[in-house]
Structures are given as C-alpha cells and as structure tokens.
Length: 130
Image (tube, rainbow, N blue to C red; front, side, top):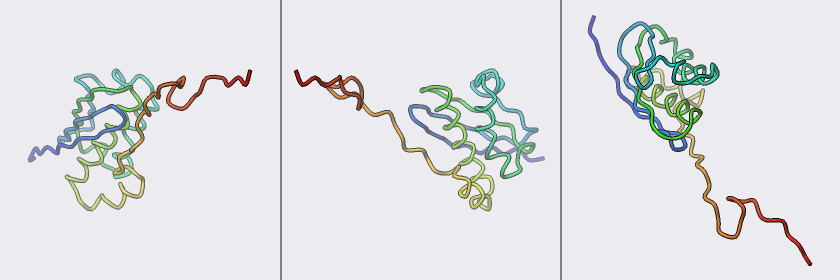
C-alpha cells in the first residue's frame, strides 16, 4: 500500500489550520491530541467531520492537523476548510460534492474594529438631548 500525503491550509476568523491527510484508518489528531481532547464540544467535532462524511472518505485517511489562533469555533471552521481542500487534492472529482455543501468557500467574516467615540464596533453610548 502506497502511503501518500495531501497537505492544505484552511482559515477562518483569526484561526489558521494546517492539515495533512495520510492514508490510514480515520484517526484524527489536532495539535498532537485526539480531536475531542482539543475540541471539547461534540458539535465542533461534527463540523470538522462534515467533508469526510459527505465524500464517504471517513475510514480512508488519518488527519494530522495543527491549528493556531482564534477560538475553538474559528479553529473548527478553519480545519473543515483545510480538510476539504486536502480532499480536493486527493480527488478532483469530489469538487461538486464539496462545493454544493459549501465546504470550499472561505468564510470572509472578520471581527469589525472598535471605532473611537463608540462603545464597540457599532454600539453607541446612550443619547441624551438634555
């Protein structure tokens, strides 16, 4: 059996995920820890596994990922994009499935900066006429 690796990067918010897909049995390591040890919530694990489930490649690959920056939700989103891009390198014919489910689109939403004279990015202080 020929061992091949597929490498890709995913980003979301402030998070960056570097993903390596290696032929294997479906084991997932995130920052050298099992996926549920890094992402404590089951919903985040579901987000990460979505591209593998839709393309039915769950048991084909081991995933070794490094994620940095942001919070857990952003990291999970970045990881999902990275896995999707790596799957695309493995097999170009998976593109319609991944595209239809929105796994290849980078979420462009970023945190809006705080403006001077305001309480936050958009929230204002209470207006008083007198």
